[in-house]
Length: 370
Image (cartoon, rainbow, N blue to C red):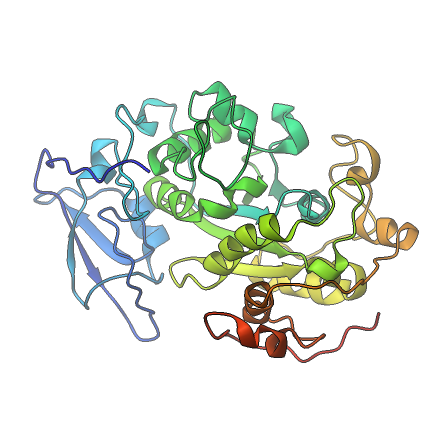
């Protein structure tokens, strides 16, 4: 990780934030307006922009106290501090304002994440059948994901050989908030169908980068929502991508992090529900993204962009390949995270008793009809 870095603001730009009834507080406190807030920005009498103010109205904010005043040189200076502890921005972070302007009013950025090869493409294909969600398939990248686009921009190493890890070619901070902001404005100019109200980016490796994306969306003045696909080990029975508990647990921790982060709006979708309880999945998505009024599980929006079963409707796929539930021996820590995510159909919470930390969160005692 890069060492912490401070830079002086070119001007005394401040943001005044007030919280209303029902707002939630968090220990996270970025130096930019990366947290959603009811805010007004001013440099004397000059505002940051009506787009941000409209987006910020009524949202949740992570702050120290009601009426806190935060310094935000990054937002209007074309550079943003990272909110990940101990990580500073890169030298020469890009300024998205140099790109052609984009009207993000009334748009929602929808980020779909999950473990790689865990079913995110199937979920993306389902969401795309709504007719109101734009994807990145026009860019002709692997599974309509953003990785190759970020590599072409020089934001991500082409030698990266893992997703949410730290090695000589990859870091969980390898794409900064400023770079995501630049990329999303570029995608809006080139690849997304901007006639649609929802702009989707399905890239599994953003599972560990949600705070950077959150702050990028705030800088652009666009609302952002995260859909997190979780996949239970007992239903992970792929021969081509066999279950590896160490890899799985490392990534599952990131899923828990997103879903427990009060600074973002996130929806959990269970892979198992797509097989056994599709009606519940559809209703939860419609409630989470009001622009979505219809989803067709028997078709996929990726049918023209993917080969094999990735272009098949979710329900058609599970009709041909019924989901198997095969118990596995897992570490208590893995059970604890599953319990946090609401899995307890097979005694996950009780099995987590030996974990170093007690599980928390809700427990859904609904039994699957397997």
